[in-house]
Image (cartoon, rainbow, N blue to C red; front, side, top):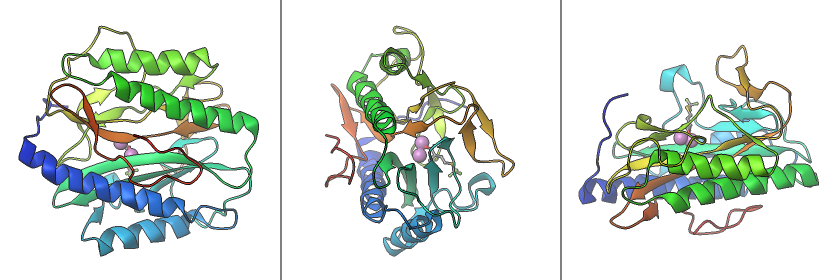
Amino acid sequence: MGNVLIKSDADLVEMRKACKLAARTLVEAAKMIAPGITTDDINRFVHDYTVKHNAKPAPLGYRGYPKSVCTSINEVICHGIPSDRVLQDGDIINVDVTSILNGWHGDVSATFFVGDVSDDARRLVEVTRECLRLGIEQVKPKVRLGDIGAVIQHHAESNGYSVVQDFVGHGIGRNFHEAPQVLHFGKAGRGQRLAKGMTFTIEPMINQGDYRSIILDDDWTAVTIDGKLSAQFEHTVAVTDDGVEILTAFDEPLLNSEVFK
Ligand code: MF3
Ligand code: CO
Ligand code: CO
């Protein structure tokens, strides 16, 4: 995957703009989520909002991906393709937005409740959000990538859930996906050390049942092998002098979701 590209302060000024736009797009898209809308409605909104702000939706045409956002419902782990599917009361849906602004990428996602959701689904989503928060809390210079994976895996498994291994977080910048790979499982004290100026995503996908995934015939949609639920949250972060900056932090609360500081 090549070497980790360290971003300068000037690079970070640009990346912050792309990440803020992605976060704002997700906050606005979240407001439309309700029983009766389709995932194509979300796609249309994300596409138009992105273009209106002089940006490009990174998913569109990426390795042949056909739409401008990923919408992953219930047992879909990630890369769900928007369609005429109607959201139903009780669904959970992850919306994953990636914007390209002035050549820089921002990548962010959250899982939302559609109407009234079962307690089991609610608990999965809450624990998954905590997994992302715990992962982010590890980030500072000299910490190792394995320290991030270990806390996420421990929190998921101690709540009776499993961690998806087939999809991982990633370095991000001028490229959608670059080095390093950020595993959401692993051993503390292992892996590459973090350094100021690294920018990457943390995006744990946590399953109710088996951790394994299969890809549907559309070559994109990843689902759990047992049909049980999967949830995901994602932020793009930068390593600072002494900690972390969440580049895709929200400046207003997500509906059905706590604010991430
Ligand atoms: N946004 C996803 C990620 O977090 C990648 C989606 S690739 C696409 O890395 F082509 F499906 F958009
Ligand atoms: Co990502
Ligand atoms: Co993403």
